[in-house]
Image 1 (cartoon, rainbow, N blue to C red):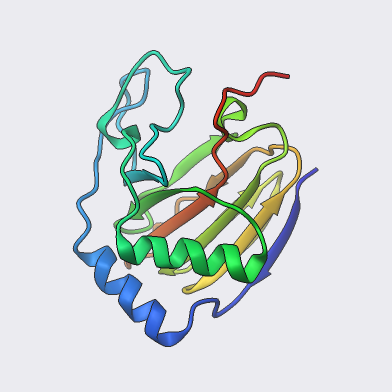
Image 2 (cartoon, rainbow, N blue to C red):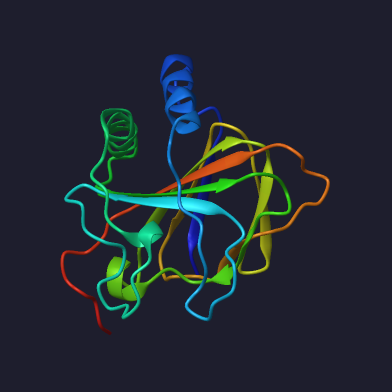
Length: 181
């Protein structure tokens, strides 16, 4: 079972404002799943070396193409790594226009992140509920949610009462090789 930790008001006010301004100008990608269904969010993947998300996937989508870290995002990555004493090297940004946008139940790619990844999620914007193994967590603005241990199913729930946007910045250590158990 994954272990979790929640930290409120994680970023300094200056860093928060800088990130928020950068997020508003960010070009994101929409698209479909491997089965052709629309995804209910827009997103963009960043890796310190520009690697794509999962090299084992046969299909290639623009949203999983590797982008190098721009200065503002690199500053956030360094801030997280320094303050948590961890070593992440990637960031997936998901944008949810409102509570109709969600992520269905899934597990992170063991091939890319290993069987016991550390997943660090920075929430910017509206409060939303993340469900991890039947446990619900309210992710507030400028909060950090950390999951460590065995990869666990998780999902961001729909919330039809939520009319405000939310950005989710998920930092992980992407392996240099494909993991297999």
